[in-house]
Image 1 (cartoon, rainbow, N blue to C red):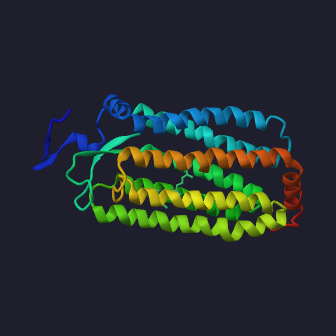
Image 2: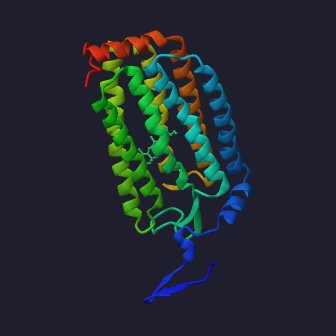
Image 3: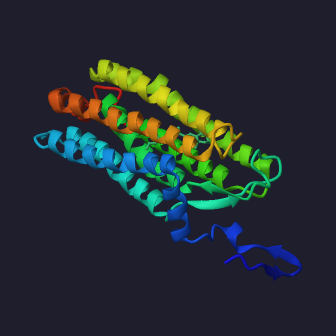
Length: 282
Ligand code: RET
């Protein structure tokens, strides 16, 4: 697999094009206990969270509360799919870092690009649940979600850019700009909506949890093997797995517990939205 291709005088090595076999990737992951456990721990927790959340939501009847429940349940569902993809070697690659990167010239570096891809599906669910809890309108919900998708996709681009070290960080910067828009909605727009909807207390708790934990991701990216490489591959992976445990399962549990116990408050939010009496009107 390491044969070299000659294309018009340019030397191209196939392994630079994400072509290490899945089998080799699978072995690489499982030869490193720390790395493997960072992935398997999340598969186990996501599995438990799915069972627990199905049970917790079993008697929710209000349609808006049900929508929050489905969005919340999708978080561990996407997560388990994401981590099975990573663990199996399907959604990881090995990349040569460009000149300037701390690991340039050190051969192929493990890249769990599937993480960034699947955030595109899991983080909008978190935001949808939070937005519905705050009783926000469609414009703000769409803004938060599209900015968030932009953040994830450009984060993926940053991780996969190997042609230029500078452009890796340019993508990182663009992703941060999208993130600022998400933070603005979370910190400024939705607290006001939640106050009008009567969900301020729980929204406030979940907002702080979300903002603090989400800030950890770009910091970890910068310190991890894809950024300045202060942390090695396995520690970076545990960092994301640890953040995921709190940003997904603990967050979702707190949200669902509140929704199951306060269905009527959520129901009233939908009523005021329909009559146009709240800021939730679109
Ligand atoms: C990246 C790197 C580029 C800059 C920024 C990032 C932010 C990532 C975030 C991820 C949150 C993920 C969650 C996943 C749960 O399933 C892509 C790391 C700003 C905020 C909560």
